[in-house]
Structure formats: C-alpha cells, structure tokens
Image (cartoon, rainbow, N blue to C red):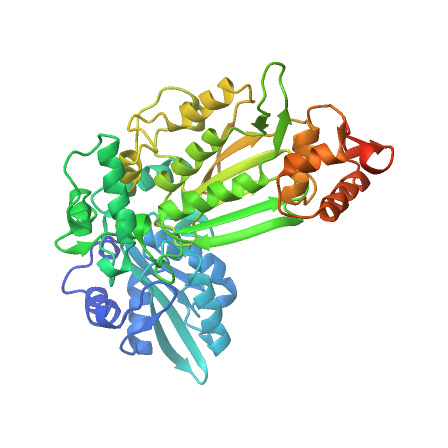
Length: 507
C-alpha cells in the first residue's frame, strides 16, 4: 500500500518541512511564461532526504537521468500542471540514485525552448543542487494553477500515480469548457497596463451608434468610458482583456493572439504561396482585412442574361457565408492560447477558415449543421458583434453558413475539428473560376476574364471601353496577350477587328 505520507505529509515530517522551507515557490522571484526562476539553494542532504522519504517516483515526483530525457520530463511537468503540481528531477536515476549532470548555458536554452511549448504559459521554478565537481541536479517545479488545462507541444497530459499519459480528449474538452464558461474566463481578466488611450475610441463610439440605429441599444452615446462599462468591458475602473481584443490599438507584444494569417496557395497543398499576409489588430480590423483578402482571391464568374442590361456575377463561394464564418471564428475562438489566430487559406479546390480552440464540451461538428444550444466561449467579445447586427444570439451562425451556401446553389461546407482548431471548409466547384484562381493573376486580368465569360466574342475596343480604367491601350493589350499565352482566352483576326473569347476549358 502506498505510504500516505506521500500524499498528505504531516506538519512534523521532514518532507513537509522540506516543502515549506525549500521548495515552496518564492512568488516575488518566479517568472511567468517562457522563463524560469531560481530560489534559495537546496543542499544535497536535503535532496537525498526528500528522495528517501518519497521512496521513488509518485504522483508529484518524476526522476530523469539527464536532460536528454527533457521531452518526457516536460510531459510529466504538463501532467503536474493539470493535477496538483509536482517536480521533475534531472540527474536522478529511476531507482532514486543522485548522479547529477553537467548543466551548461545550452542546457538552460533547451529547457527555456521546451517551456515555451507549454500552453497556456505556466509558472515554472528552477532549482539547482550541487552534487560533486561540475555535476548538478536540476529541478523543475510547478504548483496547481488555475489557467489549465495545459498542453505540451500541442498535447495534454495527466499524471496518475507514478505514470504520465495523454489526457483523454473528452476530459480535455470538458476542462476547456469549464475554463471558458467560468468566472475566470480569459476575456474576463483585467488587461494589465491598458487604459482608455490604448483603445480605438472611435470604434467604441461607432459600435454604440450602430446599436442605436439597429435598435439593439436605446441609451444615447455619452462617452467611450460609459459604453465600455455598459458592455461590461471594464471592472472597477480597469479594462478587461475582451476590450483589447475588440478595440485595442496595439496588440503586440502583450496580445499576439489578436492575429489574422492569410494565404493563397498555388495548387492544393501548402508547398507554394501566391500571396501571404499577416496582421495584428482589433476584432473589427481583422474582419475588414479578412474581407478584403477574400475579395481579392475569391474568383468571380460573370455572364449576361437575356433581358437584363447589368452583368451578372457569382463568386465561387458566397461572400455572406464567408463573412459569417469569419465572425464566428473571431467570436468563438480560444484567446487563452498566445500562439492562436484566425487563419484563411485559399487553395485551388477549397477555401478554409480556421480558428484556434476546440468546440465546447458536448458539442460535435455534426451538431453544427442542425439546431444546437448556443454556448459562446467569449460572451463579452460576442456582444458588440451582436449590437452591430453581425451575429445573432441563438447559436445559428453555423446553420446560417450552410443555408447561405444551399440557397445560392453551392456545395455544403464541411466543419472539422482537429489539431486544437475548428475549420470551416468551403469546396470550390471545378469550373473556370477555379482555373482562374490557379494562376497569380492581376485584378485587371481577372476583370478581363470576367467580361469574356459570357461566351460571346468581343472586339478589343468594346472590351477596353467596358474596363473603364485609367490605363492605356497598350497595357490592356499586354494583359490580354498574357492571358492568351496562359491558355485562358483565344483570339482570331488582327487589329481592332480581332475577336476575343474565353476558352471553355482553360488549363
């Protein structure tokens, strides 16, 4: 039977005295995040006493021969973080023999890099125990922390007895939901060092005035401070982190997760970029930049219909569905992950919008296409989007995405959950719009193809007149010659009387 002193050491035991006097975290000297802190020196005798009383590895203690086993040690440290704390000793064999190891600057660099792989950032304390000569035992220690669940290198771990194992997905999701829905939600914490001058106050006022226009608020705007109080984005005179996400003028370096990453890939893999952009900004800036990027890279099919003077155009993905997906990604992602972001990836055969974080516990991707309860991860962040009529409160965002696609005659989008993120994937139909998107075309070239897509033959003067641009004739001629060389369009004849038309099956 396990010695109960290990789990509940009494006040008279030496292990208890060792914990209180030596291993307790000195709060003033512990660094958070990607750093470590050192405490008062631990003697070799104290270390050997602790190991002798513990009688081997247990729920709060792990031995590693050297930092060559750093990865396994960090997995155990992650398990301790998800439990009630613990310590990993490097320089101690599995049998509890203290042998030490050489500790160099490279050792600390490797450990610091490993600690950076803990998400969210955790309090880690370092102790060094001199053994003999240049040999030392290195101890990494943590206590139970409230910001979990924690992952190491993207995976959650748990500690049961003297064994570290992967945390079951269901348990991880349950803990994520508990963290997101509790009083200690990330968005509900105070934004240290941020004041009103750090916010885009014009955007705060704009939100209030739009809410009045849409009759979702009745009280007139008086001040940005009053609006932030009304939206519960401040507490006791301090701004909350939700306010920074929504209206912050500067997110770096404190809020790297307020990021948007966009890419247009050539082909169906990530091997080659056509366009790649990244920006940091508040939520409404991210929505605007994402919309502009999609306008540039979502191909348009164009044609004329009998009896209509206006040219008809249809995007390869409905823009309203895309905007809905982006807003959902901004409102419902997990902001507690510093490396997170909203991602937009455009390929030849699909378009994906990805948000960091898993679905709330009890909700599956299959539920997203049918009626399901609304479980907002960030209600404070979602509220201003509701006031601006960008979302509704009834958990129908994903259903609306599906409805918009079906109503427009588009394929159903797919919802996926993998690698700690939720993805909305829009399939692209295999028509000329996809072929157009396969090449890095200019906006003018895309416009020319859109005009020619009505299947009629055009003379150059007629096409040039319809372009209504400020460029010269020669520039447009060069653009059309490039399109012909690429196999998108055909021509016959010479000069002004030449005819131009869209190739039906472009390569």
